[in-house]
Image (tube, rainbow, N blue to C red):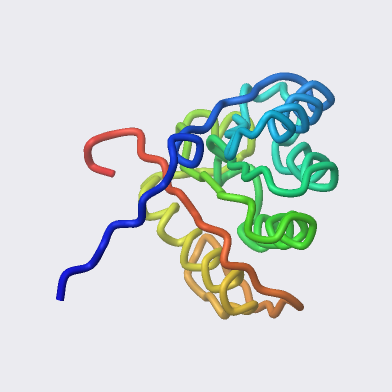
Amino acid sequence: METQKEVRSLRQRVGIMVAGDPATVVTTLIGLEEVGVDRAWVPSGPLWNPDVLTTLAAAAARTSHLKFGTNIVQVTSRHPTFMAQQILSIDSLAPGRLTLGIGTGSAITAKSIYGTEMKAPLAYLRNYIQILRPLLQQGEVHHQEPPFITDVKLAATSQTPIYISALGPAA
């Protein structure tokens, strides 16, 4: 049996990246929604910028249909349980409109900024996703593999897509 491809308009296939301070990003995202842009991506760095997920939560409360994504949240910047809680908050404000882009970032940044040792970045990322994905999709996880030991049940779930960034060919 032959399956048909979904046909999407150019507007549905094109997004735009928006960067700046939180107030500027929120204002820009509101304006993009008003002119019919379907999707916007907001970077999480450089490090001295405010938190991208907090900025997107503010934008979610002031828009109604614009889809947005993170470009790219370094996983060492927050525990996977906290990441899940942030995603659930945004999803409650903007159901189905967030795409979470995550990655390891550099091991040097993880150590110097967040104090996290990543001897095997891909193993660290795999471990992180083994917590984050079930927490979002099923609302609970029981994980006993270092560096994350967690046993938690949350009150909500989300089907937020997770895009995983890679920095090299081995990834």
